[in-house]
Amino acid sequence: MKQPAFEWYYIDAHCQGGYDIVFTLHTLPFMSVFDIVIWDLFVYKENRPYLHRFSTHPQNRLQRQNNPLLLQSDGQNYLRHEKNGIRLFFKEKDIELWLRLKQSKPIYYSTEKNLLPHSETNTYFNWTVFTPLSEAEGQLHEGSHTVSLQGIGYHDYNAGNIFLKKELKRWQWNKLYFGNRLLIIGNIEDREGNTKLISAISADGSLRWATHIKIEKKQSEIRYDIDDETFVFKEIKSYGIDDIRFFTCAPERKDRWSAKMRELIAYYSIINPLLKPIRAITTNVRYKRFRSEGILNGRTNCQIFYEEMYF
Image 1 (tube, rainbow, N blue to C red):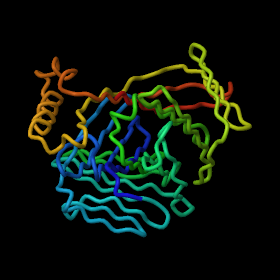
Image 2 (cartoon, helix red, strand yellow; image 1 turned 90 degrees about the horizontal axis):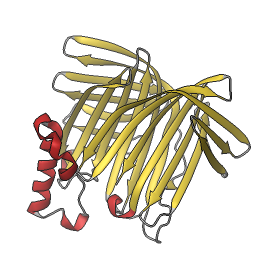
Image 3 (spheres, one colour; image 1 turned 45 degrees about the vertical axis):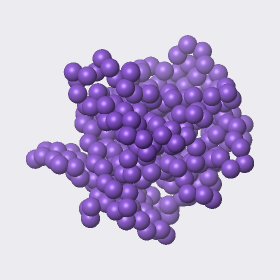
Image 4 (cartoon, rainbow, N blue to C red; image 1 turned 120 degrees about the vertical axis):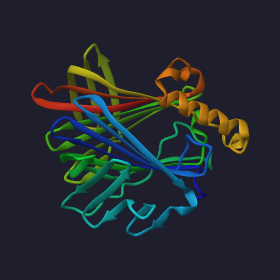
């Protein structure tokens, strides 16, 4: 397989005390024209943004080791795969995050799934799940304040050789947590109107891919028919927890000075509240995160953590 045009590693953890951790390591960022690696941390508390920190490093300084995987920048920030789990350490100024996803079974490397609804022979957008459902523990240090983290975690990998904005219109990923199980539903739509549904069910550290998927929505109720199982989710509460914008550029334009200037203008319009009115002009991708609480099949408490991307 050819060198991917983009690549990222994703982790989230949902912890006691209302904390949600979302971390992404973009080793080949699709949303930057610069040759950098992005370590990106979002923390939410009680369904609201709590903090956002990121750091950038030159791509040629990223240390990479395979079998087991180790990715490290600046001698301290690292993502490491171990026999029975994942370790992450992230530091940026006054913020430190230490997180471990642990499980009784070895790390599960699922079969690659091409997420493109319709792809040519040499194009791909692959998704691999490393740890679908595991125990999460760690600490978040904010200056002199420390929060202990205990909950559940998830870890996957994405890579492809396409320009996402040109090929895709939108996607939505739902993760339904109930009991000791996780149901994943992905819905991807390309620019030609083709859609692709992907689903998997996790229990005991493994992942089972679905071959039959049907979704029906009716007001506050969603019915998922996944192979020989039916899941009916009735929503009680819903929260929009973040609305993120950024700029992405076609590969053939990345070396132009105008593309670099456009990305910098977009960046400052995002971080500067005074420039908020021009964000819709300076950015061209929108990424939203949500959480829903409800009852599954009339008897089981269920939480959905989901995201929507609009290209």
